[in-house]
Image 1 (cartoon, rainbow, N blue to C red):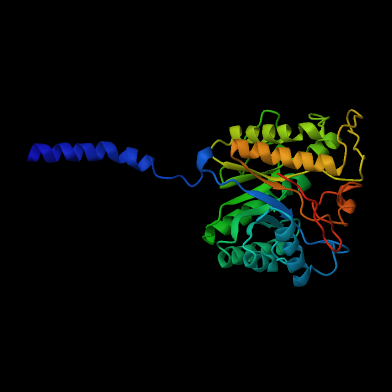
Image 2: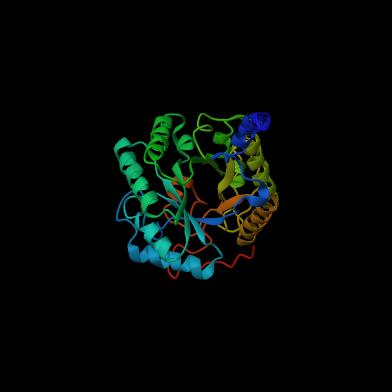
Length: 331
C-alpha cells in the first residue's frame, strides 16, 4: 500500500505542472475555429449640422432614430462607438434596447480633465452594461494624432480599468502602422503587453494619399491589403486577438481620387460600387481567416471635411440627413 501511495504521489507531482499550464490564458488567441467573428459598423451620431467640436450633443431621439435605421436597413447587430460623455452615454441604453453589441471607445485627447471624466464614465458604463459592451478601447488613434505625447493618458486609462475590475477586454485602437511600431518589419509596441486585444485601423484610401510605402492601392486590391496588414500585426503579437476596427472606402464624390504626395499617382477611385466591393470582399476574406472587422462608417458626417478634406463626408453606408436611408450591401 505504501508503494502504491508513493507512486500516486509522484504521478500527481509530475502531472500538476502540465495541468496548470493548460489553464486558459486571458491573452491567448483562441483557435480560429473557436474565435467569435464579429461584423460591426462604426457609429457616430454627429450627422447633419452636428459636430463633436462644439454645439449641442446628439439628442436621444436622434440616436434612437439612427440605431433604428441600422437595425431595419443593415445586417449589423454590432456597433463601435466614439465616446462615453456629452450625451453619448445614452448610446448604451439605446443599444441594449435593440440587442446590439457595442465596442466602446473611451475618447482620449489633450485635455487631461476631460479624459478623467471619460475614463470614469467608461468604467460606469462597462459596469452598468456588461452584456451590451463587449470590448473597450482607451482612445482611438491617439498616437496617430499626437505621436507619443499622450501615451501616459492611454496607460492611465488602461490602469484605471484594471483597478476598477472591469471584465471586458481592453485595448487602445490605432492605425496598423502605429501597431507595427512604425516599422516595415512589424514589431510590438509599448502597449502590446498591457492590452487584451489589438484594434487596428486600415485605410488604403489614405495610404494612396499619404504613404510613401504603399502608394497605389486600387479598390480591387483593398481587401488583400487589409488582410496582409492584419497578419503582420498578428505575427508581431501572436498571443493577441486582432480586430480591424476601421476599414472602408468613400462612395463619392463619384469618380474622385486622391493624389499620392510622394509619387503623384492617382489610384483609388471613389464610387458606390467601389465602396461596396471593398466592404464585401473584406468581410469575405476576414470570414475565411476567422477574424472580426468593423466597417467605417454607418452614417455620413457633414463635419468631416474640416478634419479629413474633400472626401471626409462620403464614407457612410447611410445618409447623414433625413430619412437616413442606407444603401443595400450584400455580403
